[in-house]
Image (cartoon, rainbow, N blue to C red):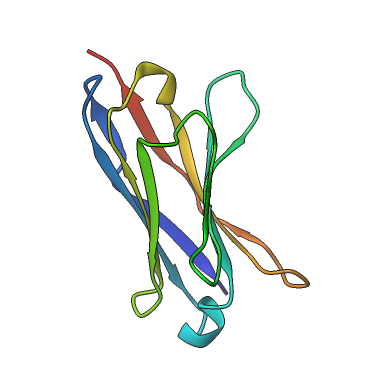
Length: 119
């Protein structure tokens, strides 16, 4: 059973930084490295939206709203994907979800971690 467990969320002041982590278990390292990993977020009353994706080849894609502020990275040996979030703003407040995808295979989601940006 594949599980994705997010951590690193919390309360931060505007302009601050957080680093989210998502650790995968129940999947061999060589299969993990073939999967695209992503971060999504969902604010209250809004649809879930893509924040950033890193492919199996480590190419990255970002939502326009986070470009230049957020950085996604992965460590296949640790089966972990990270989201470094800098210059956080109140509109970044949301539950952040980790996602794992590979074409033709089951997609997986983590349980989410709350990020609140407030003074």
